[in-house]
Amino acid sequence: RIQILFEKMSNSEKKDGKTSKEGTRVFKKMCLDGKISTYIGTREFVDYVGHIDPVAAVLLVHEIDWFKENPEYKVFAEIIATFRYGRDDLDVLGINFKKDLYSDAMQIYPVKGTPYCTTKIQEKLLKKLGTEKAFPFTFELPAGIPSSVTLQPAKNDQNGKPCGVEYCLKTYIAKDINESPDRKQVVDLLIKKITHAPDTSAPQPYVESAKNFMMSPNPLHVEARLDKEKYVHGEPIYVHLTMGNQSTRAVKKLKLSVKQIANICLFSNAIYKCTVASVEHDLNVQPSQTIAQTFSIRPLLEENKDKRGLALDGQIKSEDTNLASSTIALPSSNRESLGIVVKYIVRVELFVSMGGDLKLELPFTLSHPIPEHYEEDMEPPPQPTDAKTDNINLELDETGAYNNALATSQADHDDPLIDLEAPVIPESSQQVADGDGEAGMAAAVAVADPDQGPPDNIEEPSLL
Image (cartoon, rainbow, N blue to C red):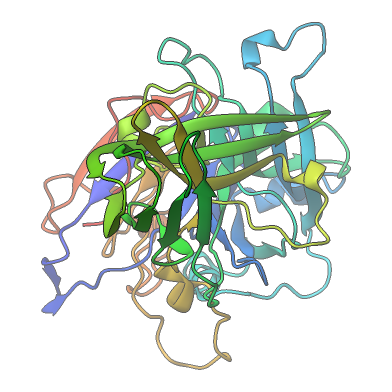
């Protein structure tokens, strides 16, 4: 069984006369038989087109003696990107509706060569967990692999995993790297890869068009442009419209819409279009009249919760997400390996009197801002020194969440939760934290099936 703990402490609380500092979340999950655990600092990895954040984690071996008695068993790590195009309940007769787009594996224990840390979080975890039982490992993801995308299911279709591209970091005990492991000796951690559009100057999207009407000697001329090419999720899009009506008809109405175009690159290309935002404005542009006006529109997931098949950024369990980011692929990328290619356009429609309309389309990029954790957590650790370990808050997702001053242990699995600021305490002297203790921590304990995820009544880890 896997125990799920949730413990929290206010940032304003003090310990030993010092105010606790806000730190970084660390997620942890233990296998069912309690032999190994996996620690990871973040479950989001950003693709900057030029490079990708490394998937850096730490393996904690709880039963070193068992491996010494059974030297044929080893610990391996594997990262897999899977495109799921069918529900779990449809997997019958050995037919799985999924395709592996990328995979990589390595041996972690026994260690081959000298283990080294690639991030500061790994270095801090090793100082507290101990180098005898903790072993860092890192996957360097290549360019051109797909981003995490989830296709929104219908409201009445919530069974099983949704369709889309998902990543899983798996650590397991086996005799060989290609051997199918015992389910009780596997740790599965869902992670996701998101894309950040590069901060390069791009020309403003611009389009112009003219349309002639019957019995009208001159056309209706329209120019449209966006204020920029790249937008962040939740940011309003401003459309600058210039119209010169030299025709004999009046322009009565303007309709602005943002459309998501998802190209499913599997066995054959299938294109799905979905309107994610739409606004209408009444106009009265008479013949021989010219106007220049700016309109705004904002695409949000909150207004599209009921649209089946809408592409979203990858989800981990029931966390909040947003519309899928635009796919930014290298010219050399294979489209079939991307799984789902997403792009966005702004459509401008003008409706004129006596029938007829004029349509224009402006492509743009929808992406994420630079994550705050990148500068601090993902950079390589400094050269080893004798300086004390910096403060870091640990919050566990699958098997618990913990912050700042916390020293506790799980009675069943000898699995200490560690305060990285405090001195190392022998495992035998660590005590389970009390919810009414002086540190002001509140704890809730429950048991969950790892295949089902945390129960609904357990709070998700949050940073206070």
